[in-house]
Image 1 (tube, helix red, strand yellow):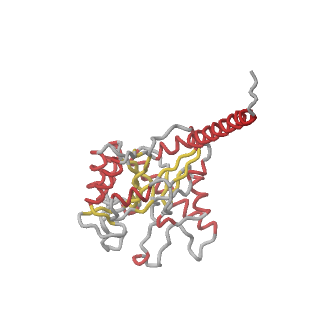
Image 2 (tube, rainbow, N blue to C red; image 1 turned 90 degrees about the horizontal axis):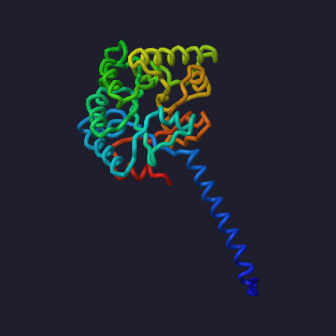
Image 3 (cartoon, rainbow, N blue to C red; image 1 turned 180 degrees about the vertical axis):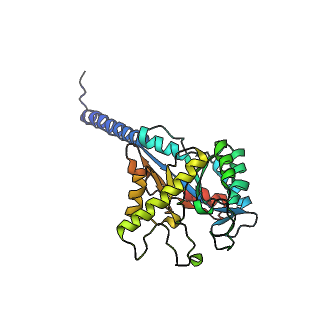
Length: 287
């Protein structure tokens, strides 16, 4: 039976069109979520009882961060899971987070490792090869914060809690201790030709990778740039050496895209200091 109400004749098609548009929007959102993942990556360094600000965080504060992440429903994921999402579309947890440490301090072994293991959480430590097991800067005899040994590294990796990746072998230089002023991370020296620069990068990266793989018996899949500094040449060498993931220190989520390997390059990380657990959760909350 045909309706004689002109309003009804108009309203029904409009309603159907709106439903189709809404359905298309929902489908588009589902597709986006299946192909994109925004993952916060946290960057820690040294941990001690007092905490000194900057790159040193107080033990109590660090533990509160882990508990807050757990209570807020975050699940720590590995770098392998990030690769698997991009390459294969393998689903990630609803609220993924990546925990990383730079440099390889002894406190990572003594404090962070057991705390993570107790909570069934995972983390990645980026190791400065030349500093492994040392408490002095190279051959200068000048004191530095103690770094864990390769024997301790093996224990952490064997547990399945910790993955070790490279922070370069010797491009995380403390310039005041370097006789010639040193290098600013992986950036080129003023007098270097491009060929010399590429060779320096290649030699350093290869040595860092070789030592870690000898210790862990696992492939090195990631490099964190010292001070976050990087160049097109450093990315070229990482690609040449088969390193799919690189990290900076830019404060932003890692925006992973299924089928796009470049989305694993130059990922940002949130620099952790003695902020409260509440401040941490607010900082990494997806906007």
